[in-house]
Image 1 (cartoon, chains in turn yellow, green, brown, orange):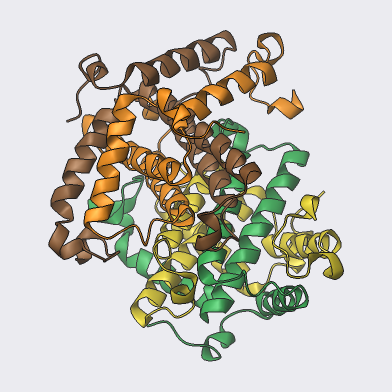
Image 2: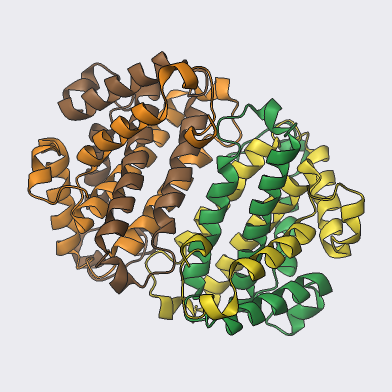
Length: 127
Length: 127
Length: 127
Length: 127
């Protein structure tokens, strides 16, 4: 089971916690908590992830590695939206996203041993 | 225009930078950089966001506010996946996600003035 | 405004209407209508669209044009899931998806005149 | 394995085939086939599915069952976009979406027996 806050707080960085607090205040001032159920926040997150992908949908991979400055800024704004909803969802559920990311990275290291995973894009259960 | 690294690095927290470095090494050891174009990372991100939403799709908002521990852990693992791809995409584009999030939060504060936005779920251009 | 059923029914093909009826019965027999609000069906649809994209996320465009038979079948199953939710959502809202698609195609023809749109992947408002 | 066209054509309805042909001509006239790899079409589909979900993200399930006419029309336009990309993707892969949907519906009938699935939103492997 994931660590429950505030233990998790030791892992979540000060900066993310600052953002979490600002987002909390932002929503409270606007009486938006009524809309911010985890279900709705997860929906909003995938919507923003779609807007992020939209910038890349007709680009070649090569082109996506060399975005024009204007496009890169627009992508940055979508990355921001995804992160902001990710923080809000994490806060709503009492999950520390950084701690969860570390745990997942450890799991991936055991799921994808270097020798077997090298140069392959297969999923761990197909390796 | 968004700040270019390494200036941006002053904003991205040490913890996220640690994760970014670990992910970079992880991909390099497995010769996965060939797959990790921004286009592909953005696709992977939305796929994970979909898996995150899957946990909530048949729940009521009420139920989503009170997840069982097992479900909550599974959601945490999906949050982790989204964050890990978000970090990798940001690194690939030289974007600081925390700096971008702060900039977006400022923009949102001006787009959604408290008086007009209170209790409304309308978009800024429909307020 | 979109035509309201049953006028729309003249456009929706017999085959899709058959599927719509089967899906309706399927849900009714299992007492699943309680879960099938348009909001939830739209979530389920994007979840399935994500599973569809997952098959392509690490492939090159070239590889995606020449899927192995097994992969192609798996993609077909995801296409099916997307279509089934699209039909259920349309039914729930009284929208004829074929009629809507025709209307959109007409709109696109005016938004993307051949001369200006040729060889360009820009959106209509950036052409 | 899924039936290969033209056998599948007997299942795909005339109306969908008409749309497929129109879309084909539309893309050809604009020299857009270069952008329309299955990978890109699958991305475009999930982007549109996200735009569809955006209309519902802050609504209650109740509200989503009673859309205002203007909203309902906008949703219809997004349903259209999803269907149009679904058809193009299917055509590009030689998959008959209606045939695939029928096959999936049969599979679901065996995966979700009425007695066990009644009133439950669990996945088949958790029933």
